[in-house]
Image 1 (tube, rainbow, N blue to C red):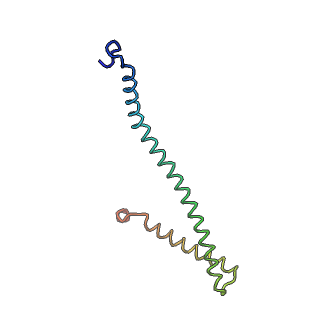
Image 2 (cartoon, rainbow, N blue to C red):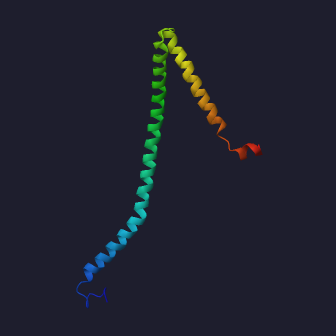
Image 3 (cartoon, helix red, strand yellow):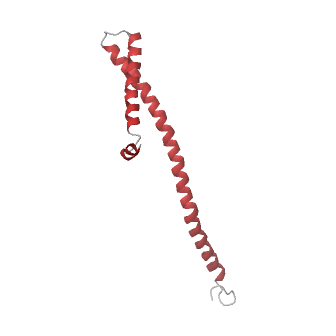
Length: 113
């Protein structure tokens, strides 16, 4: 018998290997899945916050570039190019929001209401 110390002089290393194998198997099944889940949550939150910040910075950059483009022609002065760029960017964002509002319901939900 493998577990009888009277017959097997290697019972201590065999028992230690058996315990180590089962502990490793349980650790891989339990903590491995938990680590993957926690990493997914953490990276998802980081990507979410980074996306929000990148979107805000993209709107600011777009507004500033639009001011420069409007001001390049020379027909509109600098002060007027600022509010014109705000109106154009606001219109673009309004249309994007309108498109998102149209897409929020599925056709099946609209038919039942």
